[in-house]
Length: 156
Image (cartoon, rainbow, N blue to C red):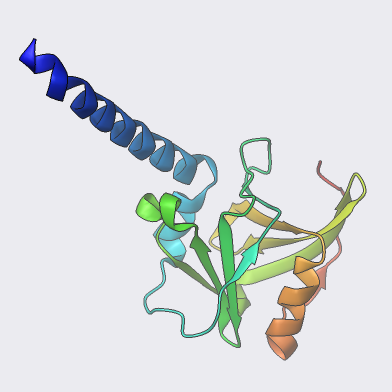
């Protein structure tokens, strides 16, 4: 009977921690973050300010690619800095992608306009930013903003 008093809270805590670790690792692979980290892991901390992106998609851009309120983005003249919300950051280390390795395109999905970043060393992993946040990022980048490529096929 004494075992029940400490075993259940311990089992719940271990189960919760294991589930959180599993979900965090799974999300890093589903979103493509783990793949991007192989090529673009940040070598130095970002000195500027990160902006929280409220509506974005990452990776294969399907229903599992959402990063709503979890993606933070920083911009400087050298490139794009990406950071994940702290609770998901365990397997999602900070990223830095130089502007010279980024292509930008615009599109419209349903009624919402977006910009999409594609990366030279990870062409299958895209980051799509919905709404006015794309214009804010463009303004922060200033003259460093890459030339936008036309997008013929709009993916949903």
